[in-house]
Amino acid sequence: MKIEYRDAYPAWEEFKELVISVVKNYQVRSIVEIGAGANPLLPISFVEDQQLVYQLIDFSGEELAKAGKGAQLRRAVEYVAELGERMGGLEKEVEDLRKEKQDLEVSSSLVEPSRKR
Image 1 (cartoon, rainbow, N blue to C red):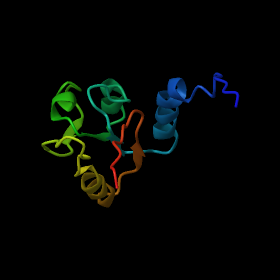
Image 2 (cartoon, rainbow, N blue to C red):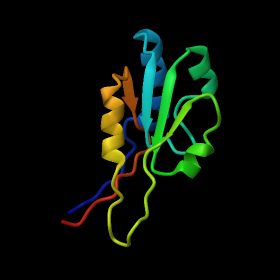
Image 3 (cartoon, rainbow, N blue to C red):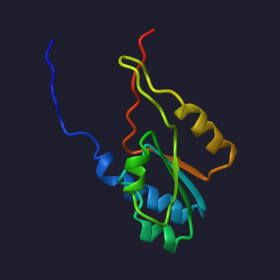
């Protein structure tokens, strides 16, 4: 079997511009970013200029705290990780946010741990 590596569509580089375009063209007012961490996708200046409700969700409260002011920061879950076990709680938090009728949900760098079954 031959394995080849090639450049693909540059989705990563263009994702932020795509989201900004969607916000502007479709009158998006509320966004939740899942897995935002310390570096949210949208610049806070853009969020403030567009008067968006921008909620960031991440497993790490410490990382979210680095994201800065201006967005509604929300910690997904406090947890104690047991070796070899998947951390739980994010699914419930995401479902709670979905009940709030967000206009847009985005994720540019979510890492989902796997669980042994």
